[in-house]
Amino acid sequence: MNASVFDSVLLRDALGVSELMTSRYAYDANGNVEYIGLAKPGTSEDAPGWLIRKIAYDAQQRPASIKFPDGRANIGQVWDARAGYTYL
Image 1 (cartoon, one colour):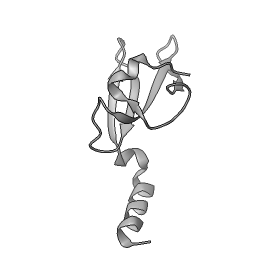
Image 2 (image 1 turned 180 degrees about the horizontal axis):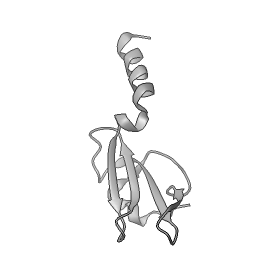
Image 3 (image 1 turned 120 degrees about the horizontal axis):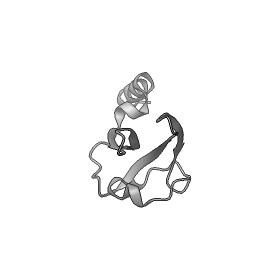
């Protein structure tokens, strides 16, 4: 393993994968985070390449579940299309 790959692995493990990704957040009418998106830096919001999560809240506004488009935690969604996906 070359030094740059090794350094990247150490950095990823130290920070966590999400710290090395571009993050986006969208909020519901109550001010709660409803969608979280992660993508490689430089990924456009209108391009495939996002991992999107949708957070559902209970009546007390506590996070109750986290769902993914079509029930799959895959990178490849479009951030700008997040509201049109079916979350399972």
